[in-house]
Each structure stands twice: as C-alpha cells, then as structure tokens.
Length: 106
Image 1 (cartoon, rainbow, N blue to C red):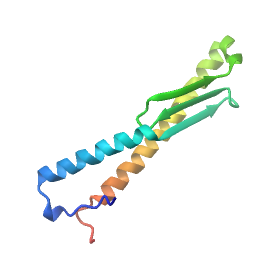
Image 2 (image 1 turned 30 degrees about the vertical axis):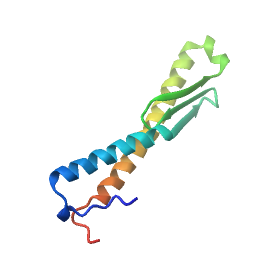
Image 3 (image 1 turned 45 degrees about the horizontal axis):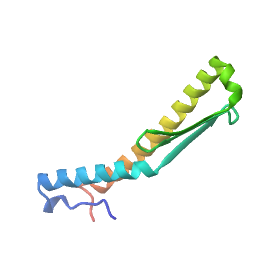
C-alpha cells in the first residue's frame, strides 16, 4: 500500500479522512509490534506493544528482597522500551509525511 497522495485531486475533507485512516491503521498495527528491554543481566525483562501498553514483565526472584536495585532496573527497562517505541513512532510518522508530500513529482 502506497502512502502517496495526489493533493491536486483531493479536497480537505478527503485529506482529513485519509489522515484519520492512516492514524487508525498505525494504532492497530501498533498492537502487533513488540518492544522488549532486558536489563541487569536478564534480571528484568519488560515488553510493551507499539501502543505503549505493558504486555509482559519478568522479574528475577533475587530482586524481590532488594527494593533499591529493583526500582533502578525497572526504571531503566521502562525508559528503554519507551525510547524504542517512540523511535518507531517517529519513523512511521516520517514515512507517512514523506508519502503525503504535495510537492513530490510522482
């Protein structure tokens, strides 16, 4: 599916509908993308989907008695998977914007 549009043949309403359709598809596709961070030598493993919803968390039992280390590693894992997801969203947005360039010569 091409994301290129011919703006000369579209009215504003059609363009807005296309943008909404693309955003909805991106949200649906996000559910299927998985981002995982493993920190502390595998002691914490955190996974989120492309919509930034936590879908899995695995904590090594040895961390349950070390609250400070657990907190530090959880924060690290959360920041890492959020960064991965954000980078993917930025790349998708750039692809969409590039495909909707009204000045492109297609």
